[in-house]
Image 1: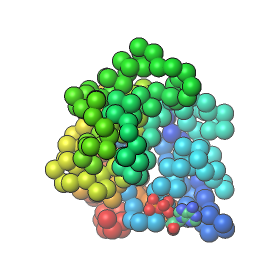
Image 2: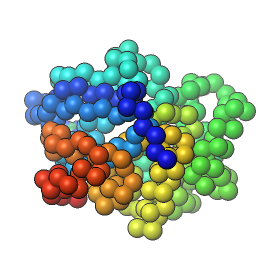
Image 3: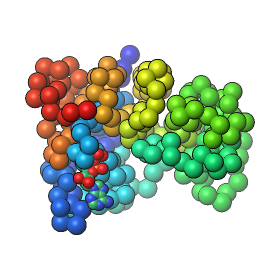
Image 4: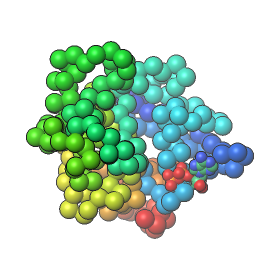
Length: 245
Ligand code: ADP
């Protein structure tokens, strides 16, 4: 059963605006993600979704507004290992780089361990567990470049999981992935959210799949014009009609 703790805020964005060289792309966005939530962020191309995520990850600084992560002001937040991030172009990782699946997932331990510390038994155990969650353990010795796009995406999710995050943020993870694999992918995210109680933030164009999987929806088009449960989303025709996928 889904379990959302409304008393615990994992991400709080309060009146965020952002401009690239004087051109405002996000205006006055206020958004909260609770522990255990599964939030779908939808919006058309150029709506500002990726920019928003970069702000939430501290990669860009908002021109106004504040961010809190796990209740702490972002400038003082240190525990980045609590946040797993699967970027948009994960499948463009240089797949010719001669790394095995297991090695790629072990990279996800660096945020905990630091880059030049050697891997421990616990690191290997966590990498194994993460690969098992995404059902890719049997591929551990294969080169990442030899896998299909969908399989590679699973490995990148495992890499994010290996750091033992409490929230995982995925940016358009199903772009370029076949329909059938997409369905499996959503099943996997559901499992991570419902069974592992991982908080999930999913940026997507795929409104149909998202609406079946997510608990809440945030619609963005320069500003936030809808933020509510999936059920309310379908009652609100403006929200449904607005972001053309
Ligand atoms: P989305 O992820 O919803 O497609 P983005 O956040 O990538 O939207 O982009 C929002 C707007 O900001 C777009 O108009 C885009 O062209 C612009 N933009 C994105 N990145 C940059 C950048 N580095 N410099 C200037 N403008 C940018």
